[in-house]
Amino acid sequence: MTKSGVQPGRQYAGGMWVRGLCFDCNNTAGNRYDTAYGLFTDQLRGWFRTGKRLAFGRIDVPAVSLDPGLVSRAILYGFHAINPRLRVIFPELAKQLLNDTRQVRLPSGLRLRAGAYFGSDFKLSGGVLMQRVLGARETHFTFGEVFFPPLAWVLTPDYAGLAVDHWASADEWPLYSVDRTSVDLRWIAGQFPIVEHPSAVAPNDWMTMFSSEITPFVQGQKS
Image (cartoon, rainbow, N blue to C red; front, side):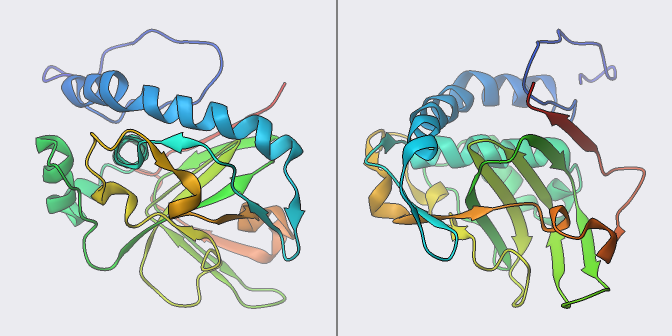
């Protein structure tokens, strides 16, 4: 995306992507943050395949090092790509990312959550409100969601009773300056819940609301 409009980009096999960032922001995300995210998830994949799963659907995190500031900024840039309304709803967050502030503080009322994801379906989408209308009443309300092994991420309003309330909080990860390059994951997230998309169980029980004009849905499957 440039000032003159959307232009075709180079496509790569594997992965998931949308054209939702301007040229400069896309380059910043790719050159500054995405490598740190890839290194972090590469360390997790082997552990999640062999790590001991605990009761109540949780798994201990391994002793891996990461840069929480870079990793969280990578996913926050991704959420701005898949939900263009974020820069309007939370302009201060967009400004912090754009200005590369030493600490990025999530606005009041916004939560960043993560979980261990072992599914074979890959999903990303923008803002969605889902209500479970059959069976147990549940609400799934996000400004963006990414389900791509070994992790799933959601950006949600700070409401009680959401279907993702039990997910691990990553609210403070963006507060780490990007020069904190070696933080032990166990210090900031002792366990990850093992998660599925809420609609994966009894998909016909849910009613989904979204904007067909601005909400992308991208889905793939492990080959």
